[in-house]
Every structure is written in structure tokens, then in C-alpha cells.
Length: 330
Image 1: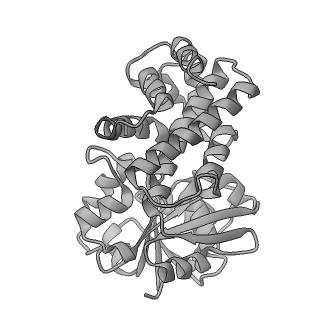
Image 2: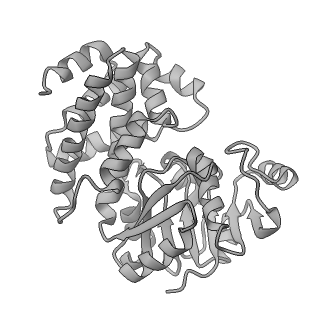
């Protein structure tokens, strides 16, 4: 395949962390940022002016552009790192063919309306072949990547050779990688772990303790496993880092925006007021609705998903909903 020239699309904290990892090994990258003023500030300051501001970049090694077509045209590998609710608005501007590129998604969400995971969306709507689609998964807070803390990533792709080649480009002293062919399982797990982190945050906001949180995460792992076995029944080990590891780091860490968002809901914030107070997107809010709609056709037993949906979208009292959920746990 040949990774070739790499482009990052997105300007948030995870996009910034991915750019940092790539520049450990690559001479240069292209980087699409929507706003020209943000690009000018980045060039002047030597860091992203809005996210992970402690990470300094050699801006001479980055070709910035606010033109998505210019960026995609000039690259062989395209890494999408935009929040899932905004993906389609970016793609509407795209006239360059994606099916000729190696497309990597680092978006831990679902495409709204279509209710498709990212790889399915790029395959169905942009005709990208399966062997040229990859996903970045695993427990990986951008804030810890910024501090060079040891991080383990899993690169999912149906073509093992392509997966290995891209994984090699992400490796460094502080980033370890492995590969997997379970791209569907990785993507759904990355969506569900955000939902379960919301649940963990809600329980934290309601003053449930560590004992209960451990039982919640244990039940969340089982619930995730039931769903993955139903939607994509292949042999996988749910305790691998790309599944349970990502769930645990998102469910427990103070870096987790989904846990923070859930905590605010548990403390009595309305959804709207919590969203206004947070500066970053909590993917789990959107993922909860998408997963609920997907499961209406699959009928998997998912009491935690149902509870989070009832709290966020049906405005059921968090204390009542979590009490009912807790009575179902053993």
C-alpha cells in the first residue's frame, strides 16, 4: 500500500495528540483546520492555541490548510479526527475521491442519522475498500500522550499488512502498538465505552462509591460483550486493552470528558447546561441515542445503555434511574 504522505483532519485534543505521535517518526504532515485564524495562531505560537497548548510543534514540518480538498488531494493517508456530529458537514465540502486513499478513523463515535460506525459509513457512502479502512483504538487520553506517558494503541484493519505498516508509523518510545482485524468490534466498543463512562460519571455525581463503580464497570464489560457478540460474532477477548482497557480509562479517569459530563448530570445539571459548561464534545451523549436506536433492531439486553438514555433523553431523574439499575446488578 505505502502510507505515503499523511494528513490529519481535525483540530481538537485527540487530533493534536495524533499529530504529535506522527511527527515523532515522519518528516512532515498535512493538517486540515477549519479556521484560518486558528492556523495563523498555531503558526505564530508553535502550538495549538485551543487544545493541548503545552505541546510544542515545529510548524515548518506541518502544511496547514483550511481547504479540505487541498489537504486530501495532497495526501495518501487521511486520518479523520473530527467529532462525529460534525463529520458530515466537513465531508460535504469534499470533492476529492476518498476511495483512492488509505482512510483511518480516530473518531470514537457513530455517524448520526445513518447510525453507522465510521468504517461502514466510509465504505457505503464513499466506496472506500475494506482493506483501505483502518481505525485507531485503545485506552489513550490525549492529555497523557501530550505528557509522553506510555500509551498502547490498537490499529484495526481487515488487511493485516496495512495495519502493521500504519501501526509502525505511530510507534515511539512512549507509544506501543498492535494490530487487529476486528475493526467493527473496536469501533462499537469505542462508542459504548463513552456511554458507560457517562453512567460512571452520573453515579459519581450521585455519590455512589468505588465499590459500586467496580460493579458498574464489570456489568458494562458484560453488556459490551453481549452487544459485540450479536453485531459481529467473531472470536475476540473482551478483556483486551482495546475493549476493556479503553472502557476502564474512560470510566475512571478525570481526563475523561464523558465521565465529567456524566458527573455534572448526576449533580443535577440539565443536559443543556452541562453542554454549555464543557468546552469539548462528550461523544457519549450522541452515542447513547445512536446505540439505543441501533439496539431497537438487535434487542440485546443492555440495561446500562437504557438507563443512560432515559436520563439524557427521557429526562428521568438520575437518582431514580440508577437506583432501578442498581437493583438489577449482582
